[in-house]
Image 1 (cartoon, rainbow, N blue to C red):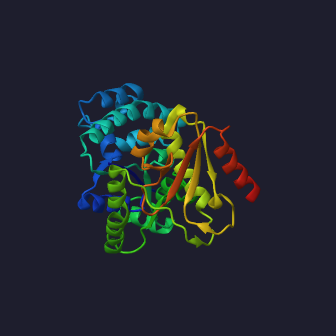
Image 2 (image 1 turned 45 degrees about the vertical axis):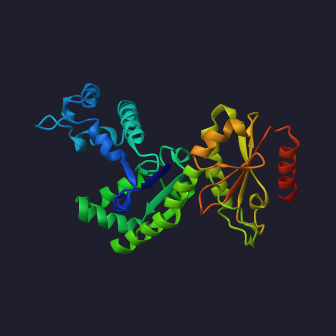
Image 3 (image 1 turned 45 degrees about the horizontal axis):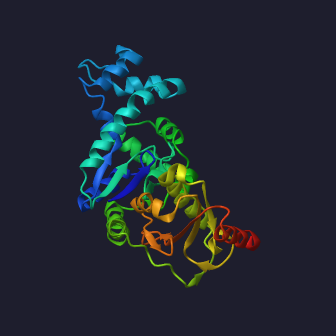
Length: 321
């Protein structure tokens, strides 16, 4: 199973990408849909919301009046925290049920609008971000949701910045062309990356480490940071920290396009094999791990900080810098 995070700002066209992935065979877990389910009439979730915010958040039929609730929480941080405290556990429990029901070979796509805002990227083996220029998004929101321009821009600017989304993205989809063009790009992503990635995770095979030297990529540090965050989350308290080492850790240096990471840990590679393998880092021989993502070769060494191999990797990087 491959767990993919899908996100994008309001009006960016994320739903088009999600629907195409679903048509290709992905299991899409829509967090917005789940958020609506857990507050349907008769649910404990709706009862808790009414208790917290009063009956004015109900419409004439006894269902949740979302605009009314939105007016209460949109500019009130404390009210928003209170609402999140009610909804997040319910959404998490329902999400867990859907994940457990997915087949073992699923490409499981979590459609999460606030993935970046909530710092959730490390929970997924890959993060796909859908974006479009602000003016394009405003026009879509005016046309499809009847928003005023001021309301649309306010909603957009209340969400994560483009820079924050780029920092979180393993895959960036510019949704500025026609719908057919966007869907064609999603089909290519599915065939060339998602399906092979899932198969490699399930088989426990790493992408070969390239040897050809290429020009320095200024995004290598960001890529390393995302991979390191996944390893830290997967390893839990068994991982002290993760360092970006090797030639790609040295700014401006041409190098083979492989991200080298050093996991500083007292745990043995065998003890980390299962948690690392599940998130896309299968064992690759000699006590090391490799990335299963066909588009992002990675090489992971595990060692205690006092070990000779760890000191050597850190020293070589620091001297090169």
